[in-house]
Image 1 (cartoon, rainbow, N blue to C red):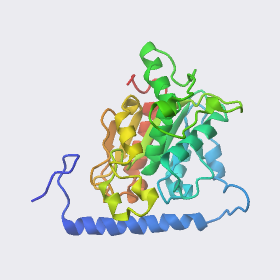
Image 2 (tube, rainbow, N blue to C red):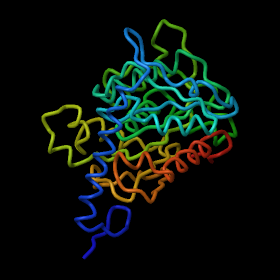
Image 3 (cartoon, one colour):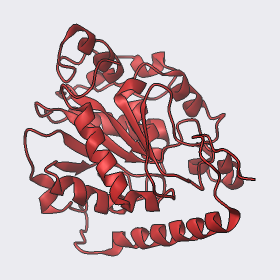
Image 4 (cartoon, rainbow, N blue to C red):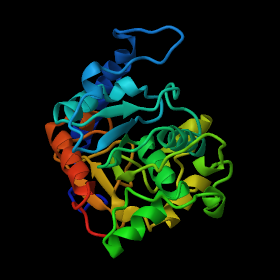
Length: 298
């Protein structure tokens, strides 16, 4: 008998799940090889495609956040699709394959965003798996959670007037997460409109215990300090769109997030779901939803 999944749909038969799992890893293997493709660079960050730097100034900027053991090139097909739709697409250079801790990476993201002015339409984080956890922590710890939760209710523009964020990371129980306001370098409001997360384990992933020796995987355990803290932080969930497939072999708990906009697409897989046209459409719709005037106050 089929068993209900966390999303209320029938659990696929075992053979089908095995085939999906195999196809998922084949896709992931191909995408991992993308880091070897041209253009190469020595002593400087690998350049993003020229088309990513052009776009409609009336649309939000997009920052891509890959998952663990993923270089930003892993997300290039999605980035190409977003650029083709008119968005300017950026990456966070220096992450390598994203094995650093979630707080460390969120801190780097916040610092990079604070170094350049935000466009009038703001910025949206588009993330895969671990990247979604990094994105949510950045929203919470930087003060963007306060910024996004309050001004919309007053009819204001949440991409303007970021409040001082000194100590916010510590107040939320995240050690070592500094605010850009604490730096002596000139900083700018982040202009974050929200987060679109694809296949993100917001509640953790119990299967991480099978690779417990790897700290970058152990960070996904449901009892991890950062996972639990993010679970308690619900004020920003209204600015998150969680996109997930019909079956994710890595996250049996599912990626639905209370208070967020949850979108299930008819595509299986943890990695292969990124390539589905339905996922691309869902991400584009989510970015539009998070744009000014596209989403009511959380």
